[in-house]
Length: 90
Image (cartoon, rainbow, N blue to C red; front, top):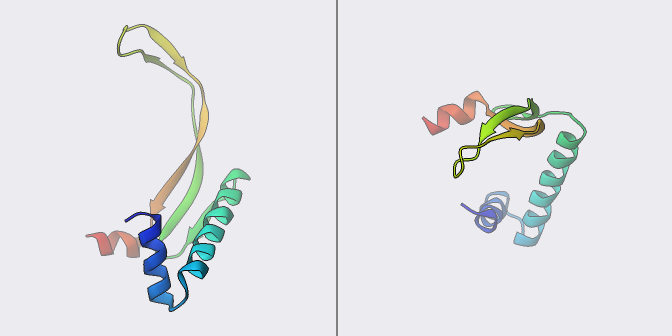
């Protein structure tokens, strides 16, 4: 499912226009981006938790040359599914 199909599904489920569903989805994504950017996590009970994790610096290898390279530390976004979501998939 892509973003357009998700907007269509939201509009149908909530009985709203596709335009309003698009605004709703974009607003939700913006709120999650802002929360993660400030280091907060977003928990949706039953669905899951979006959080930020720090990945340490490490040494890797260039696959084409075999030469060692340094990979910088960085922050990454993570998602941990909730019980209801995990149960619905299984």
